[in-house]
Amino acid sequence: MAVSELMKLTIAPIPFHWDAQTKLDFYARIADEAPVDVVHIGEVICSKRAPFFEKHYDTVAERLTRGGKTVVFSTLAEVMLPRERKMIASYCAPSELLLEINDSSALWHLEGRPFRVGPLMNVYNEATMAYLAGLGATHFSLPAELPASSAAILAATAKSLGVTTEVQVFGRASLALSARCYHARAHNRIKDNCQFVCEEDPDGMPLKTLDSEDFLIVNGIQTMSNSYVNLLPELEDIRDMGITHVRLVPHTQDMVAISRIFHRVIAGDLSPDEAERTLATLNIPAPFSNGFWYGAPGHQRLAHKPVAAA
Image 1 (cartoon, helix red, strand yellow):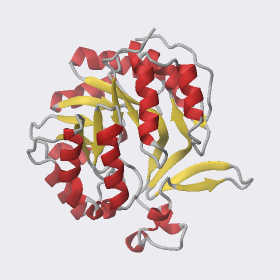
Image 2 (cartoon, helix red, strand yellow):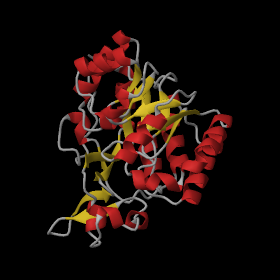
Image 3 (spheres, one colour):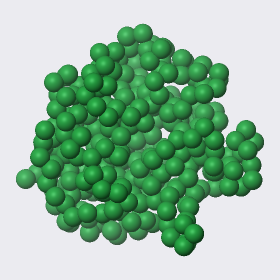
């Protein structure tokens, strides 16, 4: 059975510190070539990175809109400093641009403005979803670590509330955020004088165990999975749960090619098995995983097993 055309394909905000020209080139290709419905812009991980690209947001949003994409601005996931609180307040000011919040501090400034809830807000249960929907939330991107059983319950809750839901189906999963920057610390620097060392690792800095096995990825203050979430075989189950959007997290790999693979499965033009073989040709530099989806350790890749809707 083909996956419904009603399920929309989303590009998440870029989590890494790419230089401005790389970001401009990335969004230009997405605008012109990628069969995606929604594209997120904005700095989510580190406020110190934001000034490098702020002046380009209007241009990028216009380019993406001309390309037929819905543009969403995503806010910081960790708000600690006065300048960060001011940033959040300015982002939450009335605007035609859709807003995705990733930290509850934004709730103080929304004043009835409709908003989306990002995966770093950690919506784990029906009561939290209902509370935020009552404040104006229209869309929920669920945390990457939620199992399918929980996603199904939240999708059913969202439907009853008249809002939409989203799950991550590709890319490294966000595991934790810290007040400190281990990326800087690993280079004998402090957070306030990091010299933007994270730019040297455009897909994050690999960490290994004492046995030299690949373990985690560090991206500034963020810890990510080494493996890439890949839920191609689970797309039909996701559709059957009533989840309306599926999210691709950007990496330096060819995201246009990756989006085309997922789009073809969503459209029913390519089977998951064929899509897996095509994806394997793109030389993704880490193993795939789906453990979280099945309630198992996140780094594992388990055989597809249908999960019933709630």
